[in-house]
Image: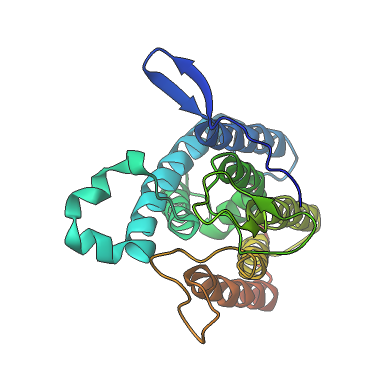
Length: 267
């Protein structure tokens, strides 16, 4: 069994202000996305202009925060919302959903595609490789904050999280997700976007890839205590939410390669 590397979740204290590592990982993810987007815009055939990158990251950040919070409320906390409506506004208590954040980003991308007159499929393909590193860093934030830990395990690398009231050796599932939904997905989508491909294909690979990798990672992650297993005695809420992503990814890939629409450079 490995010892959990006890890291203070507060990275910096400035008087009453506490800056948490989790917030810094979000910032680092957005910074990486900003850097990669500007780099991609400088390449011939880019569908997005470099001077628009700041707007893209700004609206995406709003989509992540608002969509992530609303998604958590709807997907994971609807019962609590009914009993305590004010809980929805207590964001300092935590609670974010990737699937909600994804819907928020899609809404932001849709808005920008209309205002900048760029095909939605082209812009979603452009955004696809920007997200996975942010997802990876977010999982590191979960690990440091001792949240979303894994199921009880006997593997040699199992860890006892100090905040775990049961003090059981567990899978460090946050690190599994860091590697799967983060690094592996980034390598896959980034490699794919280096190839010639039709419009919507990169978005399809992202949706299919994330859905499959998250579905796999959920087998090692402890289900939410207030939800437990949701279907068949083994399927979690996270896995249920991944099924539409897998189906959407397959559909987008079928659509892309059956229609063969080429990306249109924005002049």
